[in-house]
Length: 365
Image: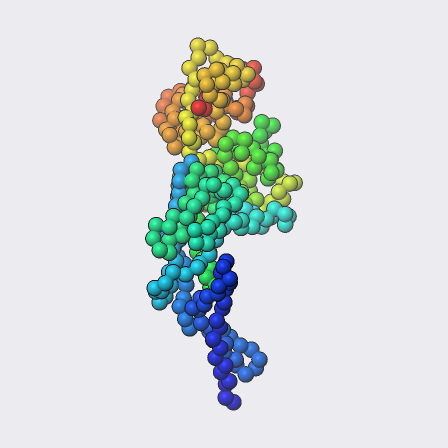
């Protein structure tokens, strides 16, 4: 039986703003197999979209470029009317939520056609296209924020052709465990999110926790992560922390109910614009006095995330216990020494003492 071939030239017409039409140059062939089914074959110019850097690392508050380039094969001599759309899947989107309402979809960041563009949501006024060369549709994000991390999609549309590439954006920072003033395991997922945000941080992603584990983070209490799972990092296997039979690693309780189950939180803090410092005072201060002392010095009492970021990213080293905004007392050590706690660097914690006790204070300006 002979196969019937019905070549068709698909000429797509698009109306320009002034009522003219143009042909976009893409050719397709409709091949019928004789059984009523057909396939579309491409036989013209082809659109390619790519990124030379699929993972970009940046610091909070800086400007960052997410590379995206497109070209045609074979190359074209005349410019074309292409539409570019950047969208974003936040790193804190929940991949397997306890309820459908918890799922986060891709959201639009920016769309552009020619010299016209529009940005959306929290990106409004902070994003633009680089356009350093023909085909360059790289996204520039200014004033990078904690919640900007995640997967960005660069989509180039030319008539029927639609190609895209993704770029992952991560921030350099520090993961720290955090628990309620009431004690261990008091946060459901939403409360853990709020607790981190109140300390100038966000819930950590698994990738951030895993990187911190590789760098030596060892913590035997389980905490929420941004994807709705509960996990904890162990570098030294021991009893009560998964047992000695398990190798070192990040232990996982898997996906938990976002509202009913309660654990601690793993927060992520990135670099800060200002500075954290220990306020020199002739007297020790209770919590109320500590808050006022920072205000009188032209600053604010520091948050836990700010202290961790200053310790890890700015080398803050001080062997003096001081109040922080959540009512906890801590101090940062980068150079371990006698009478300053354990032999390893870290942020030491006195927990949440009575607000009437006397300590120093860490301020943020």
